[in-house]
Image (cartoon, rainbow, N blue to C red; front, side):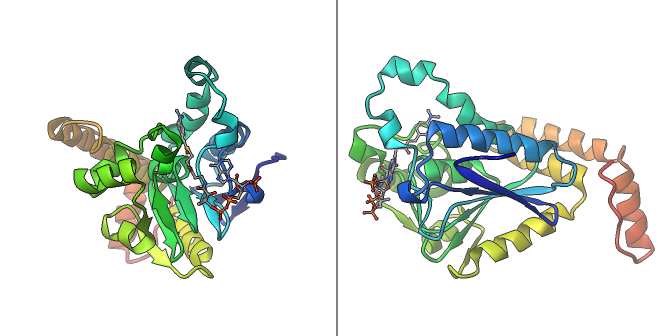
Length: 257
Ligand code: DAK
């Protein structure tokens, strides 16, 4: 598929999406988000792909939603122009998605990264919610996902005063899995993604769903969900194979069934 604002590639079971608006620091325009949604759904449906990586450039993962595309919008324009469904696609992807962040991850760029399952960062990564400087607030989870990770005090400072987080700070708060040198962050992220792509696919899918439930359900409901998913995995060929391989002291050969 030919895209104008993203570049997609498949590498050893990993679907890689690179944002490609370098002059605008990868500002997430409606057109880019439409292409991203399309690419995510295509990778999610592709049996050759086991994990997905989203990345930008060394200078910018993404400097936010495209301010120039929003500047003149009315409240009803924002409500009716279906921005939401383009952004929401990320929340419906079944395969694990890693955001590989270098440079700016601001506003919607940071929110998009937080909607992924893991974040890796280069040492130059900078995370922030600068919307307050534009007279608005975050609109895609920045007041919710961020607050759960960093707590109320720091979230208030970030949302109201544009306090930014370095890569290392974000790692300490559990927002970021790993921090790598700028030169290697993408290669290291691809290694992590290839590892994910080699795991038992049905167990990965249910594991991702179950961890996500921890943010959405009560503990009782989350535990019930986990138990059902655990039982369901005993209906898979991969559970039989995984346990047989352990006993026979060999590597498992997953079928994704
Ligand atoms: N939008 C459009 N263009 C942008 C941009 C952005 N967010 N960020 C940078 N650019 C453009 C600049 O306009 C400039 O273009 P030209 O003037 O050359 O044409 C070019 O990228 C280079 O930027 P600078 O010249 O400013 O570069 P600097 O190195 O001096 O500064 C910077 C880099 C990242 C600090 C600065 O560009 C900056 O502050 N950018 C804006 C960051 C920001 O405020 N981001 C938050 C945007 S609001 C929602 C979904 C999402 C959202 C809301 C709702 N729903 C689904 C409901 C999200 C909202 C946002 O993200």
